[in-house]
Length: 470
Ligand SMILES: [Zn+2]
Image 1 (cartoon, rainbow, N blue to C red):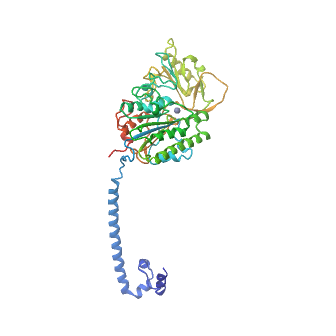
Image 2: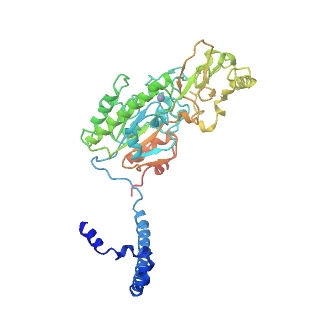
Image 3: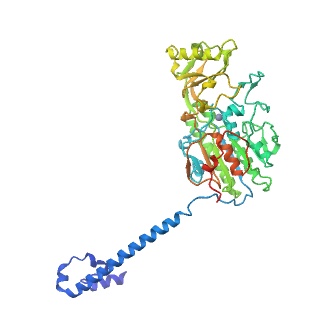
């Protein structure tokens, strides 16, 4: 540096080559014409060369860019350590779409960034309740076809009452994924998924692989139990596993979706996903496992000023099978359902019923077809659809509670949950349009490369989500 500076100091009037094109010193050019001509020729040559080089470089750039775009088509990545595909299906109960942006969720976002996400969330089936939806996810069937039409209901043929603790196989129709795998000679494990304790076909809820529901088991224990499966020899690792967290549904019901306690619950669930990812990484299988992270439904805030009373609609309590948000009515045989529906809608439209405009009553066969909620005797003949955030009760009570609820029309955006998937067959950072959760069954059987049972999902759906194999 010092030498160059000295040389320039020694010849202050000698322009450097780099400065020539910008030299506007006309007096020096006039006083020395011959060197100026040479300089001009030199400049012309230099400019021509530059233009030619720029053109050549542009063509080369375009050519290589076009060539480079061919191999960027993403294809399924080969398994590293695992011998065969493993799907881990995780449910965060009541994880409404958008909760992932309520606070920092670094672990969920890690899966989103390097995986595939339903851009505007996962659409639940109607009614957007826990049991019907969890069982739709694993059977690919709408509730009318898998039989779990509500969290509680009566079988009109027998008068038997279904509750969330009913494990007799007669209630649970269709073929859940664990049964499909068992039928194909593959291992499955379940950690608290509705219906998984039911012994059906070749699935007998085996001891080591089927956990009996116990809400007091810590989330950490659940994650660690799933991780331990990856310590088994490759032939013993289940090809399909489930994992279930009750949160943030629990807090959503109690406090509504916009409470700080929801935010805390999201942070906690996210940390469980982090614990899972770390455990899989320690075992060298994180990139091999297909993780499908979903919720069963969303959540909306409710308050007691948004109520509709059945007393105002002349409907007695014994007719009601469920109130809210799914109003299900089975009138006695001397009251034809059609007449009851007509009378209720007449009252609702009359303006005499408080909040009447927010309830619409249907014969189940006349419900919008997109709800797929008619083809089962277990569904009572009269169904009421309440607007988002409203509740139906029998009688006026002097209380003013606020909280949260779900079960509404599945077209209501607040009922949506998330679909986030990560693994060898999922594109990185890919967004896909929203879809109904009955599509997940076919997605899982496609990843595992097995034939599934007939269901309400679309056969070609997995092609739109999964990466091509070659
Ligand atoms: Zn739920």
